[in-house]
Image (cartoon, rainbow, N blue to C red; front, top):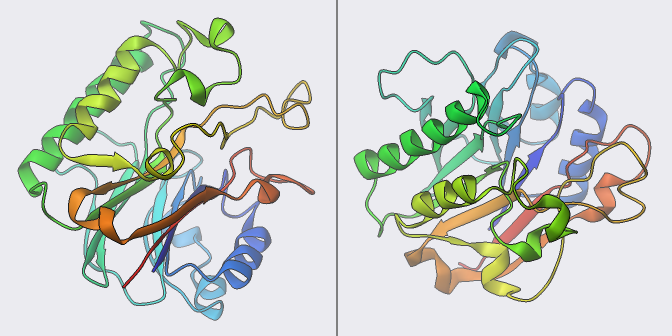
Length: 256
């Protein structure tokens, strides 16, 4: 079973790239983030023609998440369902082939200590509460997304430059660790403890050709799935070419 995650940075602007990637890579499940469209504007027909069902939680202009799967997702939940008045479409979960799959688009945080930064930390606290309320550590759960946090120094191209900057502050990294403490493991780091690979590169200043990126797109999975984990990698090639997303897809494989 192949599960992938990709911040597509506008599904309409990147529609043909999305369809080509689905056809070329044939994931069983693809978690999408930053759709930048409403549910009504999502390209359901094109996705269906490529062989996928879609569960969508869209939002005009901003945010938006989806789960695409070869078998129809069931028990779809949109949002963190905690009673908080939050209009951001950042979270969707569904069951696919017996696994609870999450697609999450964590807040960016903008500037340290800004209202957006405070919201980001609170969103992570709400996510941990969601897990504690809805799941047990021995459930079969895979959480894919753009988490907007680089967990470790190896996950940024220049630690001295990034230290104290949004995406790499200690408070953010601790917030992500608190979520993972529920019982989640970073699939890429589990298989590649010493490998430096990135999943996001700024469009500006030739950051991609220089490979000055950060790893902020992650696939997390619960302990019962770890024995089934056989591969996990970043599809860096998808960041190349005309009008790419600034993120590359990340994928993992689970044996039956």
